[in-house]
Length: 477
Ligand code: G3H
Image (cartoon, rainbow, N blue to C red; front, side, top):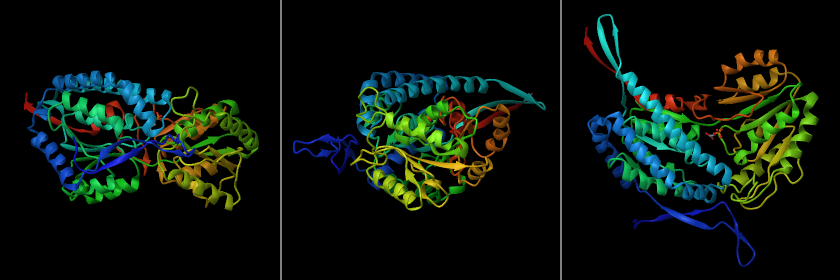
């Protein structure tokens, strides 16, 4: 029950009105959390943690796991509703929404299993230099957890679940596109965990989060979003240099197509890499470098494959491209294309970059060059910049000089040449994909990035480490 002001949530899916116009329907609303309410939620988390003496941080690992097992059972009961909301709220296809739900459930099971190992490790004793040490993992305090709109369930839970399991208490702000789908799950959190373990605030991060950061009571900031927002939030904390931050940030992942690449395979992987969920993945390939000797052939095959993608409603079978949830995104993408065209590039595929409202047909832009927005900016949408190169040192230099360092995809047939390129690249990014698209999954792989792309590592085991500290109980032998 909520008496205060609310924000209407508009679906990206446009419905035809009786007068023939297309409109985004209101599909629900969320409360506007005021500073006072945000601070009350913070106090609830602080009280539940009670300086490490609360019920949750002192509960045995086995009992915490049992609460989480109850939660995941309740979560599975809500699958249909959550998947439906994923489609309506962020326009993700039925297949991808279902996959996001299922992989998140699996992530929770994997994290529970990993925690059992951590707990077993803590029950073992190490004897060194006459000292017996029991090495445990203990919680850090209050975690502020903010997830992204593109994977509002999976990426959010990638931080939320390990943070809870390690005994921390949580302040959770769902993404503003992707709030409603959390409602049924928040109810499950309330019934499966002690009061004050998970506390929710709503609204734009810029308006509700500053007061929390300035309070100095947040011990861990976790955000999957932009480095600009993360940097400004960190600075607000009075002890920012002691704040732990677990961040998944910007990326401009490059694919590099070498002269001997298998073009059919490369096109297939690059389509997945650039346009799955309309290119709205932090792990998407956001620029393709193609050796000039195969550029024409690649462009032809790639544009053909783009034009075969089915534009449709998220629930329609076979849909690949769906409406965009961020209202300002089509204008931004149009501006990027205009900027590239003004500097000599063209849209290669017929109809690319057209659309209305939230509908935006994918555009392949060629030849993209330094100085164009699409060369360095993270477009996070269905526009694919392609850059020709003569010497592989050009894309390598581009990757080295980038502010980002998440992933790279290399396409080529010569194992020696691929091997030669891997070593310099693993010192620039956190994952090199060989003849495969960039992607985070499987979720058990370490997920991180260098430079402005991440802070800390997320995955099952790494995330448990990220939200805890190793402590020692020592006695003399
Ligand atoms: O946006 C980031 C997601 O975690 C991407 O996950 O690459 O496995 O689809 P994925």
